[in-house]
Length: 125
Image 1 (cartoon, rainbow, N blue to C red):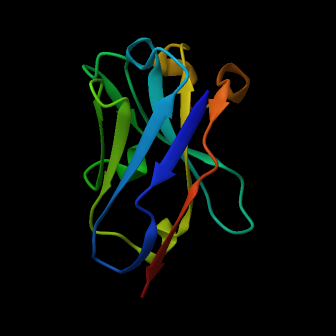
Image 2: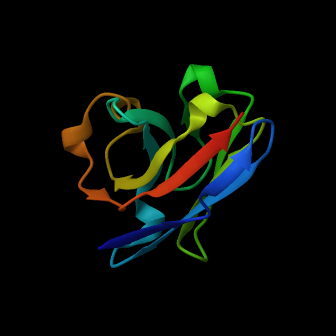
């Protein structure tokens, strides 16, 4: 299984980025897909998750209204649209795949078997 993130880079505060994660080696349409991030010197934190059909999403409360998760099962790709970016959004963003119910994603990391290598997002002030 491979999860490959792309779309990271340097952006000014207030700008937008769209991250992509393309999966291979798994039946993409049967996996929930999610995003985590890890800022320098901090623990990895949950960003959001989308169900295997795309009908349900769960975003961490502090990011609602700025971040959106979507997926295209025909392209085996999940997206993270990030708007109104802030310097505190600077982090490495990781894609993940699991068959675990969405409710477990924020806390049950052991239930997530597949991770990408991450893409760096840097937001300048």
